[in-house]
Length: 141
View 1 (cartoon, rainbow, N blue to C red):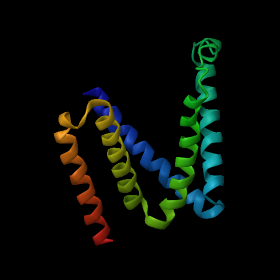
View 2 (tube, rainbow, N blue to C red):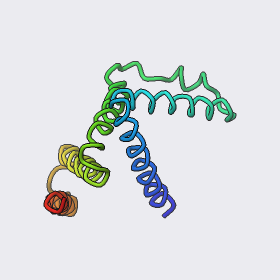
View 3 (cartoon, one colour):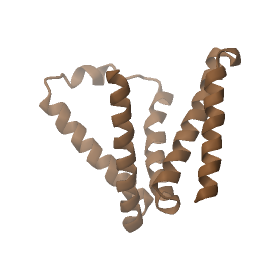
């Protein structure tokens, strides 16, 4: 139950972050907003790590040597920039609904690839409902 609440809190934080970045994007552009987002995040996490009693060298020595694994950072930075650009044009609700729909649909594709289609009945029903919700929201705005 606690992890569900943490997940919901994370959703609130992501939404709030996207709204702030959208406002930055309006004034300075999407890539500047993304840069500010990542610099401030880096500084915050650096201070957090330095104030915790955690060894900084251990995790750095255990970093993966597979370059492909670092694409997550590139994709994350691109996500922030694109979302900052789209947020001011579509509004916060539409942007977030579309992001969640995209996440759910791609998650379904990944699970279909890893688990097979036979075990995903409820997830497929959920995906259809999300698509229906996106279409319904699009008609009302």
